[in-house]
Image 1 (tube, rainbow, N blue to C red):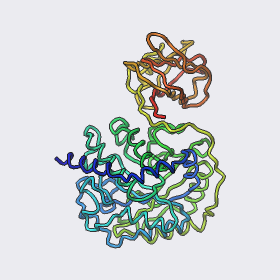
Image 2: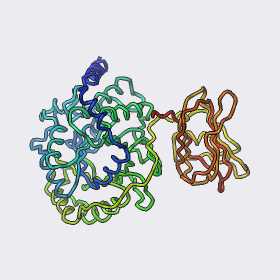
Image 3: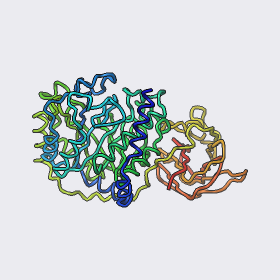
Image 4: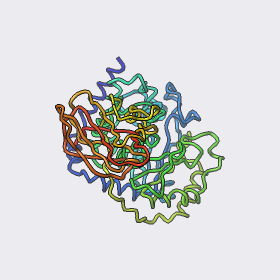
Length: 467
């Protein structure tokens, strides 16, 4: 009964999105590359982890924690905005829902929300209003993983997907212009919720339909290689999780995040803990990242009163005194558009020329970039093939050549027993992305005509991309 209730609320929410807002959004849509450049130019912002974990001295909250503990008696989002301005930040990003599923806005999709807490105030609304008053952009964080509502591996239902759509619809229609959504807990090694379990392209298209100029950032750098935008508009790196951008080789619009305190959500020791030094944050993060097309977002965790501790306020002021905040010449180079469609080659039957016994063909479409199919060095013209099991339409192929072994190659597909060529030539990129007019076929093959050492493929992708 609860799932039916949620679905009913979500359908109502989706159906009542103001038509005027939809029309206006479509009319004002801007070029994605321009939006990515604009994001890079924002340079520095404030991440605000504030949710039910704040009141548990934990980063990962009990999914059954009662809303009664969410009681920030002195909540003041204006203080947050003033603190951001003191550090010369240009935007904020608030955790609307973290992994335990508690919503800090007035949502109709679940009763597990702030309106059923002692606070009974829409924190998202107060946050966006406070930051906009200070001339700051507003972004929102949203977790796909939701342990309270059992949106986790092995338990995902249609009602869960409708809940996600409903919650994102509320966030993108009730709070004005949202510059970006930072999405977490999706297709990550630790969350194990795939882009098929919760369909990425459906959610991505919904976001762009509601707010075409809202960038979608999925925190998936733990899985996907640094050379292409897989399922994200902005390449995002979480330093605390060991994800570090290369300031020398990065050519994509990027985000790097780090907390000024020792962890994301407030802990009782934070008021007296030593914080990261302003000099380190400016000279080792903001300045070099900005030169490498990377925006830096610093997390500052409000306490259980809903206020930023005095030591964190001083740290932000110190940053503002050291950092000039001046524009940096970081004009984005040309790069391929984000890949957002389902990989039809994933886990399909595959075949290849002779390969080493340890590195056989299934490594090239196992959805894991850390392992590769490797051709035996005795093979002069190695090949790799995926069987789609039926005739499918597709218009994009990707080849993850993580060690740059493949120099010259052909991409072909089979239709009615006839092999036809899509591409023949050279591409030195580690992630080789080929977009072309839609074709129909049941098998797709790469034939490697020139390579170094052993031809290797970490992942082979076939997509039917909406255009």
